[in-house]
Length: 269
Image: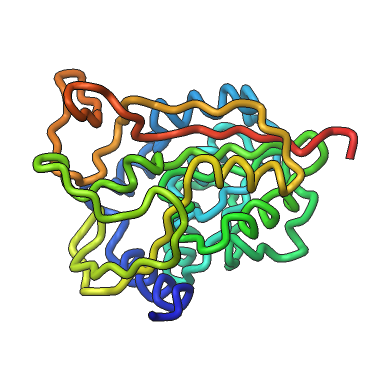
């Protein structure tokens, strides 16, 4: 088995090199003033903190910084963290073009540097986050350490049930619901654009494991929502419904495709 961190860093460097003006990432639109946050992310922010204006926000696994820019435009003081040097170069350039002030830090999300500790009102992580993390407990402890007392984590991610699915019709599962070690996948392109072939190493984490990791990291779970629809197409081969939303049906019954976890560092600490 390959070294997961090294393989995934190479993969994200390759993907970041081709992301930025494609069907998924519209840099020109963002520079012109478009908002990158989906309605699910906006709802998550509203539930977690209300408005981010005046808050210190850590954007975890920020990639090329689209949401970092959108959060900064809402008045937040934003720091973006990612382990890909290529992604961060693009993120810095994008923030400059958008004329917003965002600090970017190269760091492993499961081992964020001491300089970020106790510095943030909100840690924001969405979407496609924990499948890249071998030790979800380490990730939670790392992210929790960046929060001030009373600070909150907003984690919006692909639901573990939906993460299992390779194709919808026929229904094929190619990923575990819960952690059972690393899984290698050959990638001939990225989710957003054509790219050279890479290998990814990904990990399954059940909802129970994720919530328990948050509690074990000293966080208090405020709410957990499971979403039966998504504005995003995750490439499982299903068509959007008439309202443009993507849903996962088995025998006519809807199953969750996303979840939102909001957790708080207790104010008394």
